[in-house]
Amino acid sequence: MQKHIIPILFFFLLTSPIFAQVYKPEKVSPKAVKLYQEGIQLAENNLFREGIAKLQQAVGIYPGYADAWLSIAGMYGELKDYDNSILNYQKAEAIDSDYFRDYNLPYSINLAGKGRFEDALHAVNRFMTVNNLNEASQRAAAYRRRCYQFAIDQAKNPDIANYMFSPVNLGDSVNSAVSEYYPALTIDNQQLIFTRRVNNYNEDFYETRRNGNNWSAARGLTGMINSNLNEGAQSISQDGEWLIFTGCNFPEGMGSCDLYISYLTPDGWSEPENLGNKINTDAWESAPSLSPDKRDLYFASRRPDGYGGSDIYVSHLLPGGRWSEPENLGPEINTSGDESCPFIHADNQSLYFTSNGLTGYGGDDLFMARKGPKGSFSLPRNLGYPINTIENEGSLVITADGSTAYYASDRSDSRGGLDLYTFTMRPDVRPIKTLWVKGRVLDAKTSKGLPSAVELTDISTRQLVSRIQTDETGNYLITLPVGRDYAFNVNRKGYLIYSENFPLSEKAPDSTYHIDIPLQPLTANATVVLKNIFFDINSTNLGNNSAAELDQLVHLLKENPTLQIQINGHTDNVGKAADNLTLSNGRAQSVVAYLIKSGIDAKRLRFKGFGATQPIADNTTEEGRASNRRTELKVVAD
Image (cartoon, rainbow, N blue to C red; front, side, top):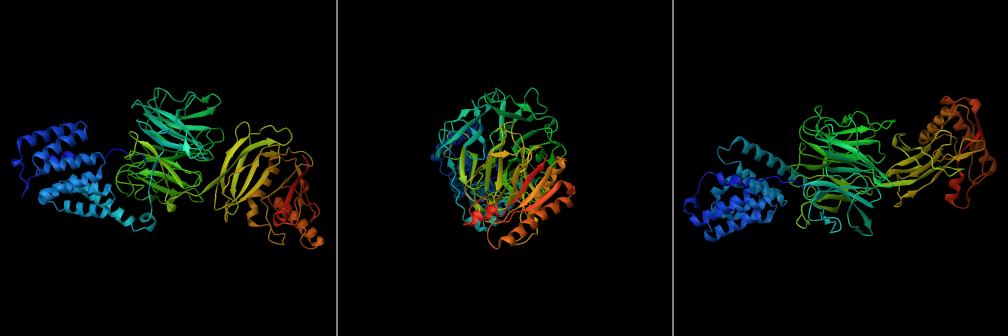
């Protein structure tokens, strides 16, 4: 939530009409007026604290100097010191309430800055009773009134009303006297990448790594990524291997700001590459966010086909490694205002972004939307106060478990400029808790790493949730949002498929998984257990949740037209041996029937039931019996 100054225009205080009943500006002593003018001159040069000191001298000479109290309040407002701003506005109002009426608008903004939205609404309503308000003042007041009413309505939500917001500064090892912002996090919450404004003009990337409950001393990224140009607004892939970022005014750029990619190598980060003319245009592109499977790239752009201002787009990675033509996320997400800073969570469903076109608290607010089964997003939801304030909020990232967020702010305990903070997300706006599987795909005989496709499918809907390609040595990382049951498959031509399942719809373990996957070459007698084929209890009827796995098997057979297989059925030892043999044979036959129905030549297929005669686990435990109730694929001829 990067903050930007929203001027309260304290200079408006100098041009008010004189309706004084008590306050008479002409009665102010010349010495106080001189100090007042000096204070205003300092404020015009952004020296607000020095200006306040001069004005305090002026009111010390003439305590009834309402204009001075009002300007002190305005300067404190510029410093986001809402308490002192409110106090000084109230001192001015006590001198002459009629004279003060014209200042109820900036007064209301500072009340809202403290979260006092009902008081702010009363103040702005008083301002709107002023006669002959110009059109700009009417628009500004109407906008603030809508924001305050929205905040009051939102506060009726008990989730917001009971939320304790307590951001914690990441400390001196991360933050410095200059600004740190735009955090990006790997899925294991062990590496944090951020932008630092070095020497107050050059933006470079820094990293810190988790050290127990703390963070290590931040250091610049190694390799060829940092330069004397501005690199910022970055997204690191969940596995820590890719960094996509915004580069502005680069010599090879296509517009003012373009998106670039750098890869982690043994020597550090590679020289950045422009993402090309599908992603970048002669307009402005920024704020990338990469999906956990590295297949979708969300970003903000001001290209002319949008709904106005900056819009959020998504581009998909094509098989050849190129990015598709970006798609606008549509009017459900984008407005005539500015939408930016997208962050797609590790669950690959929860999208967070900023908008000043959707109803909020003022300026840029943070919103979230969830991706539905068909890929479209729900209507956005405002994250609520005090995550959102009257200021401009910016980028945030959220850990895989959904509970902890990181963002940038210039709070009172900042080491200088913007600092990085962490806070606990409010439960009702958290993303879906996400676990992950990482490991290596290798040849079962040679142990050589195998570049392969790794797929995660929702068993109930047969929808592909995630599909990733391992790196050249077979390493992979894939995310598992809880709340669903997944089929996990690995495919590579010339090898048997690998099958695993993760039943996370009812109860999710708190640990992650490390699974190395030895793929069996397609040679005679090679076997694999098909863990995502399910049957009704004591029945040969295939469960509907078996379809995803069976379709993978169809694909394997079509991709290898000479392959001949046998489906073997097995049971546990519960019941009569003859019944188990019949049941296992019937189940194997049901799988073969599905394959034939899907276009596979029956001559390539065999089936056989073994009952309980070939156990692979102890039948005295339920876990062991579940392992023994299995369906296997055996290669007859390749």
